[in-house]
Structures are given as structure tokens and as C-alpha cells.
Picture: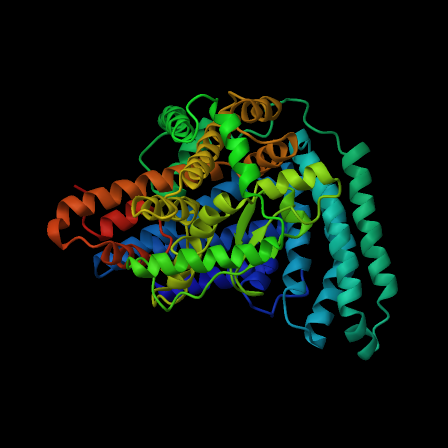
Length: 530
């Protein structure tokens, strides 16, 4: 199984050299993805060959069967997207984000002539890459055009940063880089012009939706879920209603005479961090890790997770915080916007998005025992499929599950922190509703923004970024909710089955031995199907 997974990864890194860069592999650092039709046909044929070999493989035990199922479903999802969804044709943000990730991945690397040469090669290849984008894109949905335009502004910043960072290396090797940088900047401007006035967008407000049939396909193959999109739509709405009820109760525990939003705004104001947000993160990450270790949810093998300010291109899609996996650089929590926002009222608002109460829960989700702990544990697994193949429902759901487990153990019991945690979860619930609504064509992107503004204490900028992410990455918010739900059910079933032998530390250890495979496959492996 390791050999087949290795064959797939070699193929994937050739097809997507930026993913290789972010995995810490340097051999493809100077290239962009070949998304022309001839290259896509070759890649699809190779994927089919690996999928066929995976199906035909004789497996000896349950562990191999679980790994084979995970790898085969991953291959099928990739094939279907390339053959039927064809994101390279309809999503200009895919091209721009690829370029942003390609340069940013090199900027994360320690200095050296080889990194500088790779950066120059990528800058030199950017005009051709974007020329291919202009020739390939056909009637992209308007919301994805708007996303790409916002990311192009951030890409221009990355081109400038490469020019500053690698200028010394280029001079030392005799490279005449000024013209290459100028041509890369012109390529960014040329694509911006094409998206604004030459490539006609799809006028249908629901054009970005993938539709219920594809939603069901993704749920089945990507997340090994038996649920349909319609079932999850009902669950997400119910979950949002139940969570808002909990928010109301948490606010009433602080001030029963005021609406929960007013109470929460007061909590935000009380928790605003006047000093260094990144330093405040380090304090919260250390505190969460110490608590997790005390209760056996973590150990000395998990290093603390530091924070960095998010690069501008990531803020286009994530207005609060996200996790950067190790590879090209060190693992980090990326905190969005609070440092860079220019006008003072907006800066204050975004500092409120990272108040000390919310920051404590984000440290649990993204650090230990959440996403960072899962990432560290899976990196040490012997089975390659479990190291390399993942489901977003498990990756994101694990952070939400870890938060629920820590809250259940009494972490941050202060009423203000309890309210912040429930409001943070309400955001996840409403994002799942908006995600499913957009892709089942029940909400247009504009209606989704209005929906979020009406139900969450967020501003227009945050709501717009959230909806850009939901349209660019279908079912991501739904996957987080699904993963949390399935992990909580898995724990409840383990408690019933194991009885007095149940210990949180054992449950964490046994689950994380499967990496980030879909939770139903973990359930199969733990013999908890019944």
C-alpha cells in the first residue's frame, strides 16, 4: 500500500509542484502546474492506472483494507473533479491562489541560492502560466472572479517581496532579474485586466454552486459519509438553532436583561488585547497545551504552536485565523487582519476578533490538543496513506472536537470565555448552513452574506471573506461540522463499548493512529460500527 501511495504522491507533486514546495520537497520548486488539456489527459490516465492497481491489490488485514479504501476514494474524488467539475475552467481564483502559494512557499524557506533560483524561475514562468489561465477560463462565476481579483492584489505584494528577499542571491549568481520581476508584475496586471473586462463572467447568481448530486458524491467518497446533503442541511439548521439557544443562555448568565449580541459586544470590548497579539497567542497556546497535558490529552511530544501574521492572500478567504502545516516552513497559526488594517475603527474590530477569550479557544482548535497535535501525530505514522491522505472533515472537525473535550473538562470556565466559545461555535454552525445553502442553490452568494450578517456579530468584510471561502472551497464548513459531530458520536460509542476501560488519553491515541482519515473509516478500524 505504501508503494501505491508513494506512486500517487510522486504523480501529484509532478502535476502540482506548488504542493511539493509546501510539503518541503525542492525538486519541483521552479515550476507551475501544467493545466493544459494534454497534461490533464496524461494525469487522468495515470490516476486511473493507480486507482486500478489499488482496486486489484490483495490486502491481508483490516488495516490494509481501510488504507486502500481511503486511497481509492481520494483518487476517485480527484478524477471526478478533473473530468466533470473542471475547476481550472471555471475558477480563476484557483490559478491566482496557486501562484500565491507558489511564491509564498518559497518565501517561507530558509535563504540560499537554490531557493532564489527557484523563485526567479517561477517569476519567469508566471506570464506563461497566466496566459494559459486567460485561454482556459470560460464564464467563471462572478463571486470567483471577485475572489481572484482580491487575491491578485495580494499576489502583487508577493512578487515585490520576492524581489526584495532574493535580490542578493540573484546578484551573487549573476542573474539579471529586474526584467523578470517586471514581466511578472505585468502578467499580474494583464490577468487583472482580463478578469475585469475581457473574460465574460457567468451571469447566473448560483453559478458557483456544485449542486446536490456532486455534494452527495463528495460526502460519500471524500468523507466516507452515509449522509446526503439534504440530511446535513437539516442537521446544520438544527445545530445552529440549538447553538444559538446555548449562546442565549451563556449571555443570560452574565446579564439576563440584555440581548445576547449586546452582552457579547461587551465581552469583546473587555477582552481586547492592547499589546502584541502574536505574543498573546503564544501565552494562550502554552496555557492550552499545559491543560491538555494535565488531563492526558497531550504530551511532551507536541511542541507549542507559535503564531504569525497571515499573508494578505490568505486573508481574502479567512478573516480570523487558520493553521499552516509544516513543510516549506514551520507550522504556525496564521492570525488575519488585526495588524494590517489601516483605518482605526476596523483595526479595533479585528482586534476584537482576537480578544483574549476567543484567542484561548482558537489556541485549542489550531494548537494542542487540536489541529496541530493531529498534524504532529500523523507525521510520525508508519503507514503512508495515514500520513498523507486526509479528509477535511477530520482535519477541521478534530479541532472542534478537541475544543468540546477541553470545555467539558472545565477549560476557561469564566462566563465570558464560555460565551465566547459558544459564539465561535455558532459561527461554525451558520457557516455550515451558508455552505450547504450556496452549493444546493438555496442561497446566492449575496444572500449568504446577508444571512451571516443577520445571524452573527460580524462585519461586512468578514462575511464577504467567509462567503468567498465557501464558494471557492465547497463543503469545507459543512465538513468541519460533520467531523465534529462524527467524532463526538465516536467518543460516545467508545465510552459505551469500553466501559470502565475508557480513558480520554487512550481514545485520543487510538483515533490519531489513523491520521486524518475519514471518521467512518476510523470507526471501522476501532470496531465501533455497531
